[in-house]
Image: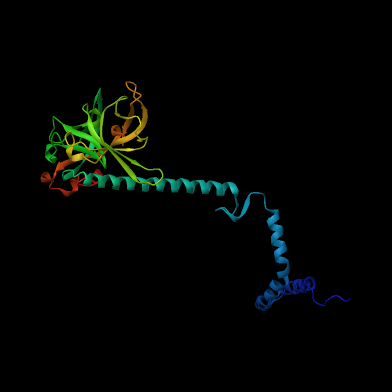
Length: 306
């Protein structure tokens, strides 16, 4: 049986000869002929494109991908793995940030529910931190000129920091940290369900200054379901009446209560923020002492209504 007159090989050979001749012609004529021959070449090589591409794929090094990096080099599986892990870290950070914002909103709603007195937050830079035994103090760069007076409450966002103490100077004041408070404070513990996400609130719990320094402890019934990570909110109407609903801390650990392990267990509570390293706090002034300068209102106070 006679072979076909036109085959891919014969067409390519003919085109190659024509291209050779075309290269010797003047540029105007050569460009015209090249434009005519290009579709012919594309059609002739169509049957061999797929096999050639498959051969190129098979020749790639193991682990390489078709994509290239910024230098034009093939991307490796390791590079994609690193990019994937970096994306997971970014997603986790954003999820933590969302959880922090949700928690802040919930605390502020709790402040309103407990009907804390209306106050005006005034921002105050922290000048120094002093730890003199059981009494820890922050010195702030605000004083009587700014309406600061002894007995006022200091906060950081939604967390309780402490109380302004005597003496108060014209442009400076001392804030005794809440961790120095030696009398019991009334709190409520709020715990989120792992299954439903709903909150359960446990009231009528009293906390005291604990050991190690800078922590609190509380005794609860041995069968209490309170666990590590629960929020501890101030419910005291005597010692910090304008800070009710603010975060006192977070349950850090649940241990046995040595004097009566059969009936009680101990909650170890740490402050929600590290009070030693704050750079700015807010002092809550009574509503009728609102400062004339609106720029003094503290952004970090977590709201001006409590």
